[in-house]
Amino acid sequence: MLEIGAIVWGVQDVPRAVDFWCSALQYKLKYPADDDWAILVPAEGRGIQLSLSRVSSPKAKRHHMDLFTDNLQAEVDRLIALGATRKAWRYPPEADYVVLQDPDGNPFCVVQR
Image (cartoon, helix red, strand yellow):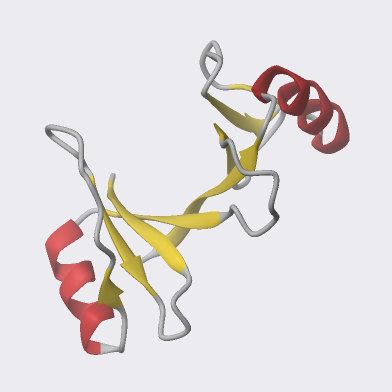
């Protein structure tokens, strides 16, 4: 089973985005932010995580979804069977995710919970 675990939003200024989105959505930092990355969660209750990732491009369409699962390989195989493709990606050591593309070429990540 898959569920949306996080929306990853590309921003040029992470601290500014943290201030804006926390206020706009009534979210809070899950962990201390750094210059390149921040994770926001609802201040109260459950909801979808918003992750902020620093990007250098001023162009729009810098977003992707992270889909969380308890069985990474089974879900990757299932999604590929449905028409997803693997996206060429440089993975860091011990990566807990796989980057795929939907049939339109939009990237998304499948992340081991």
